[in-house]
Image (cartoon, rainbow, N blue to C red; front, side, top):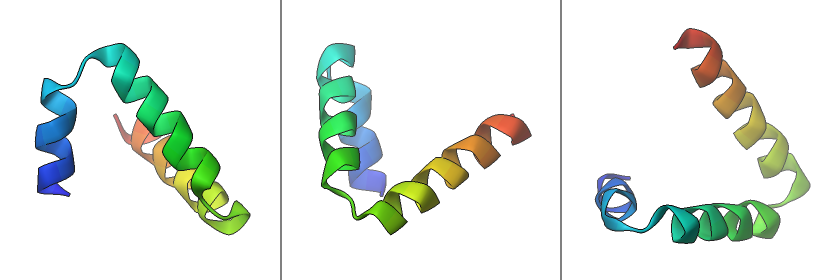
Length: 46
């Protein structure tokens, strides 16, 4: 995860968005649901 964060810090925002969407679409439906729950929980906690 540390390596991914370092990469994301240096990547152009448009590229980060494209990679994030591609990664999400490549996930199984179950992992998509888990990912969305995680993101929503993190936003609520912020």
